[in-house]
Length: 191
Image (cartoon, rainbow, N blue to C red; front, side):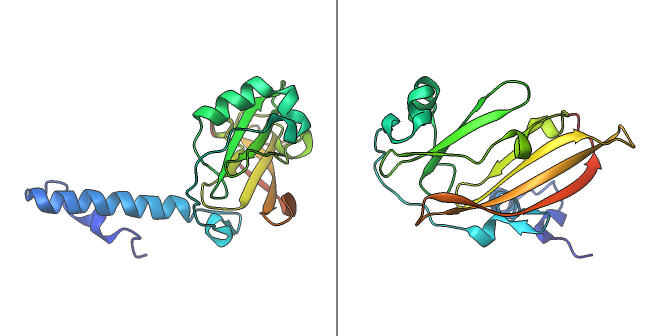
Protein backbone atom coordinates (compact mmCIF):
# COMPACT_ATOMS: atom_id res chain seq x y z
CA UNK A 1 0.00 0.00 0.00
CA UNK A 2 1.41 3.39 -0.98
CA UNK A 3 1.96 5.92 1.77
CA UNK A 4 -0.19 9.06 1.82
CA UNK A 5 2.88 10.92 3.04
CA UNK A 6 5.80 10.01 0.73
CA UNK A 7 8.15 12.62 2.21
CA UNK A 8 7.68 11.13 5.66
CA UNK A 9 9.96 8.34 4.48
CA UNK A 10 12.88 10.79 4.45
CA UNK A 11 15.48 10.13 7.13
CA UNK A 12 14.79 12.08 10.28
CA UNK A 13 18.44 13.17 10.51
CA UNK A 14 18.14 15.71 7.70
CA UNK A 15 21.28 17.86 7.88
CA UNK A 16 20.33 20.64 5.47
CA UNK A 17 18.37 23.27 7.43
CA UNK A 18 16.45 24.38 4.32
CA UNK A 19 15.39 20.79 3.56
CA UNK A 20 14.37 20.31 7.20
CA UNK A 21 12.10 23.39 7.00
CA UNK A 22 10.54 22.13 3.77
CA UNK A 23 10.04 18.72 5.37
CA UNK A 24 8.32 20.22 8.44
CA UNK A 25 6.09 22.49 6.35
CA UNK A 26 5.11 19.57 4.10
CA UNK A 27 4.40 17.38 7.11
CA UNK A 28 2.20 20.06 8.70
CA UNK A 29 0.18 20.62 5.51
CA UNK A 30 -0.14 16.90 4.85
CA UNK A 31 -1.45 16.34 8.37
CA UNK A 32 -3.84 19.30 8.02
CA UNK A 33 -5.20 17.95 4.73
CA UNK A 34 -5.52 14.48 6.28
CA UNK A 35 -7.45 15.77 9.31
CA UNK A 36 -9.71 18.06 7.27
CA UNK A 37 -10.54 15.29 4.81
CA UNK A 38 -11.42 12.89 7.62
CA UNK A 39 -14.04 10.33 6.66
CA UNK A 40 -16.47 9.15 9.35
CA UNK A 41 -18.65 6.20 8.38
CA UNK A 42 -18.68 7.38 4.77
CA UNK A 43 -19.19 11.08 5.51
CA UNK A 44 -16.52 13.65 4.74
CA UNK A 45 -16.40 17.20 6.08
CA UNK A 46 -14.93 18.20 2.71
CA UNK A 47 -18.11 17.21 0.90
CA UNK A 48 -19.95 19.91 2.86
CA UNK A 49 -17.16 22.48 2.70
CA UNK A 50 -17.70 26.22 2.80
CA UNK A 51 -15.35 29.17 2.55
CA UNK A 52 -14.39 31.37 5.49
CA UNK A 53 -16.06 34.73 5.60
CA UNK A 54 -13.91 37.56 6.88
CA UNK A 55 -16.03 40.04 8.73
CA UNK A 56 -16.02 42.07 11.89
CA UNK A 57 -17.67 40.11 14.67
CA UNK A 58 -21.13 41.40 15.56
CA UNK A 59 -22.09 41.31 19.28
CA UNK A 60 -24.20 38.31 20.23
CA UNK A 61 -27.96 38.96 20.07
CA UNK A 62 -29.16 37.10 23.19
CA UNK A 63 -32.80 37.92 22.35
CA UNK A 64 -32.62 36.11 19.00
CA UNK A 65 -33.27 32.70 20.66
CA UNK A 66 -34.81 31.63 23.96
CA UNK A 67 -31.55 29.87 24.94
CA UNK A 68 -29.75 33.21 24.69
CA UNK A 69 -31.65 34.55 27.68
CA UNK A 70 -31.58 31.27 29.59
CA UNK A 71 -27.81 30.71 29.21
CA UNK A 72 -26.65 34.28 28.61
CA UNK A 73 -23.47 34.06 30.71
CA UNK A 74 -21.99 30.96 29.09
CA UNK A 75 -23.04 32.02 25.59
CA UNK A 76 -21.70 35.56 25.93
CA UNK A 77 -18.44 34.47 27.53
CA UNK A 78 -17.66 31.68 25.07
CA UNK A 79 -18.72 33.71 22.05
CA UNK A 80 -16.52 36.65 23.02
CA UNK A 81 -13.42 34.51 23.51
CA UNK A 82 -14.18 31.81 20.91
CA UNK A 83 -13.03 31.54 17.32
CA UNK A 84 -15.06 30.75 14.22
CA UNK A 85 -15.24 26.96 14.29
CA UNK A 86 -18.19 25.95 12.08
CA UNK A 87 -19.64 26.79 8.70
CA UNK A 88 -17.19 29.56 7.87
CA UNK A 89 -18.78 32.18 10.13
CA UNK A 90 -20.25 30.53 13.21
CA UNK A 91 -18.94 30.06 16.74
CA UNK A 92 -20.19 26.82 18.30
CA UNK A 93 -20.73 26.97 22.04
CA UNK A 94 -21.19 23.82 24.12
CA UNK A 95 -21.85 23.31 27.82
CA UNK A 96 -22.69 20.41 30.10
CA UNK A 97 -26.35 19.73 30.71
CA UNK A 98 -25.95 17.06 33.40
CA UNK A 99 -25.77 13.25 33.40
CA UNK A 100 -23.69 12.85 30.24
CA UNK A 101 -25.62 15.36 28.14
CA UNK A 102 -24.41 18.45 26.32
CA UNK A 103 -26.36 21.47 25.20
CA UNK A 104 -25.19 23.93 22.62
CA UNK A 105 -25.82 26.76 20.23
CA UNK A 106 -23.95 28.47 17.47
CA UNK A 107 -23.72 32.21 16.97
CA UNK A 108 -23.45 33.79 13.54
CA UNK A 109 -20.63 36.36 13.66
CA UNK A 110 -22.26 38.28 10.79
CA UNK A 111 -25.44 39.21 12.68
CA UNK A 112 -25.03 37.85 16.24
CA UNK A 113 -28.05 35.55 15.95
CA UNK A 114 -28.18 32.33 17.97
CA UNK A 115 -29.16 28.94 16.50
CA UNK A 116 -29.72 25.82 18.59
CA UNK A 117 -27.57 22.76 17.89
CA UNK A 118 -29.40 19.47 17.29
CA UNK A 119 -28.31 17.81 20.55
CA UNK A 120 -30.56 15.58 22.63
CA UNK A 121 -30.58 12.43 24.73
CA UNK A 122 -31.43 10.43 21.60
CA UNK A 123 -28.38 11.51 19.60
CA UNK A 124 -25.62 12.64 21.96
CA UNK A 125 -25.98 11.04 25.40
CA UNK A 126 -22.62 9.78 26.67
CA UNK A 127 -23.65 6.60 28.49
CA UNK A 128 -20.15 5.15 28.22
CA UNK A 129 -16.88 7.04 28.47
CA UNK A 130 -15.41 6.76 24.97
CA UNK A 131 -12.67 8.72 23.19
CA UNK A 132 -12.49 11.44 25.87
CA UNK A 133 -16.23 12.00 25.34
CA UNK A 134 -15.56 13.75 22.02
CA UNK A 135 -18.95 12.83 20.62
CA UNK A 136 -19.70 16.12 18.87
CA UNK A 137 -17.78 16.57 15.63
CA UNK A 138 -17.59 19.60 13.34
CA UNK A 139 -15.09 21.63 11.34
CA UNK A 140 -14.50 25.32 10.78
CA UNK A 141 -15.03 25.14 7.01
CA UNK A 142 -17.89 22.66 6.79
CA UNK A 143 -21.68 22.55 7.18
CA UNK A 144 -21.52 18.90 8.33
CA UNK A 145 -22.37 18.36 12.01
CA UNK A 146 -21.98 14.91 13.56
CA UNK A 147 -22.84 13.65 17.02
CA UNK A 148 -23.18 10.23 18.55
CA UNK A 149 -24.78 8.54 21.51
CA UNK A 150 -22.65 5.92 23.29
CA UNK A 151 -23.84 2.95 25.27
CA UNK A 152 -22.24 -0.20 26.62
CA UNK A 153 -22.26 -3.18 24.31
CA UNK A 154 -24.40 -5.88 25.92
CA UNK A 155 -22.21 -8.77 24.66
CA UNK A 156 -18.67 -7.44 25.19
CA UNK A 157 -17.75 -4.87 27.83
CA UNK A 158 -14.59 -3.99 25.85
CA UNK A 159 -16.80 -2.57 23.12
CA UNK A 160 -19.16 0.35 22.85
CA UNK A 161 -22.19 0.86 20.62
CA UNK A 162 -22.25 4.26 18.92
CA UNK A 163 -25.41 5.67 17.34
CA UNK A 164 -24.26 8.40 14.93
CA UNK A 165 -26.46 11.23 13.65
CA UNK A 166 -25.30 13.21 10.61
CA UNK A 167 -26.72 16.70 10.06
CA UNK A 168 -26.35 19.30 7.33
CA UNK A 169 -26.69 23.00 8.17
CA UNK A 170 -28.96 24.65 5.61
CA UNK A 171 -27.58 28.18 5.40
CA UNK A 172 -30.54 29.57 3.47
CA UNK A 173 -33.24 28.29 5.84
CA UNK A 174 -31.02 28.44 8.96
CA UNK A 175 -31.88 24.93 10.14
CA UNK A 176 -30.11 21.61 10.67
CA UNK A 177 -31.46 18.76 8.54
CA UNK A 178 -30.88 15.17 9.56
CA UNK A 179 -29.11 13.38 6.71
CA UNK A 180 -29.07 9.90 8.23
CA UNK A 181 -28.22 7.84 11.30
CA UNK A 182 -25.78 4.95 11.49
CA UNK A 183 -24.93 2.43 14.18
CA UNK A 184 -21.38 1.26 14.78
CA UNK A 185 -19.74 -0.97 17.37
CA UNK A 186 -16.09 -0.41 18.20
CA UNK A 187 -13.54 -0.94 20.95
CA UNK A 188 -13.75 1.39 23.93
CA UNK A 189 -11.12 4.15 23.83
CA UNK A 190 -10.22 5.03 27.41
CA UNK A 191 -7.66 7.79 26.84
